[in-house]
Length: 396
Image (cartoon, rainbow, N blue to C red; front, side):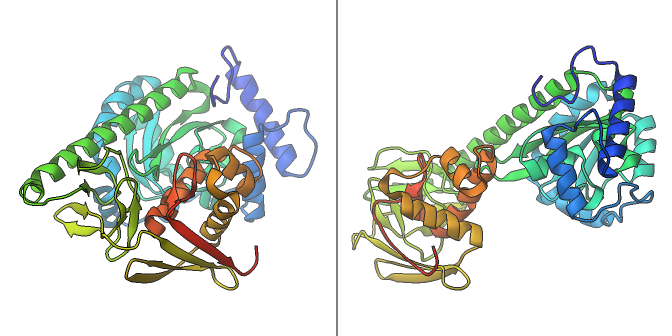
């Protein structure tokens, strides 16, 4: 059944009526024999806490201007695969009476394709390009709830918070950057509730997995281009080295065991690399040249939690300071406390969220932390690099 909101053979009209009665009872503070699914209950709780009205606003959602939508499209990596998504999903949109909607990571609708009749209904709902479909803006909906839960979501009829969305079903899945794990956006299929087919879940899942693999292919082509561009420089350079892209993915290695990725390079910030020791990344066209410094191989980190969290890092003859979010400071503190054994993604999820259901969120947070701190944090498992000496000051 996956993340489906219905079971095969469900009487859709009858179930929709039951869900609407449940919605009105539960949101109104009453009792209902039918209880919302855990996913729906969590979302309703978040939305009610934000003060939204289930009556909703029957007007346009103050969409972004068209030029802003076009700019976001150009900047989105999803522009590389939108044509493929159209071919996979929209080929049956008219016959199946649904829309395919693709948002960015902020929940802003960038593309909308599908049935002309359903588009007209969606326009009246404000479900159009430039509109923001987060929980904070429009309540429980598959797009916003998929962002909040970091997981695929399907909602049917009265499971939506706003009453004006009850005639709809929506099925959404996050799409991530295969290089960094960062959320790129949401792929959603929506249509009239009574037209929902159980195969919609498989359609959306398949489309997302295939397009993430396509994005990985684009990444491999970019690494090949980086190798070609840097070819003359590599031919003239002696000694062990790595050539990496801006996300730390290795395009070329010489004199050191091959590895897929290192920490994200930064200008004038040392990074430790297995087999090379302390290195100072050097900017080259399209990427970075990473070579040993030949100096002291220890990095000293001072994590200060006494006020606004920050780190001071010393390595070789370099010294730098960076502020941290409270979440990143807590992750660093937990990894320090775990010692050399480190923590798996599930263990880190339990310490941060109280359960192991936030693996995608944890991986994304650690990825962002590694972008800030370079090689201080290692993965598989997550741990402080052996070449790092870390001191924690302040609470915790």
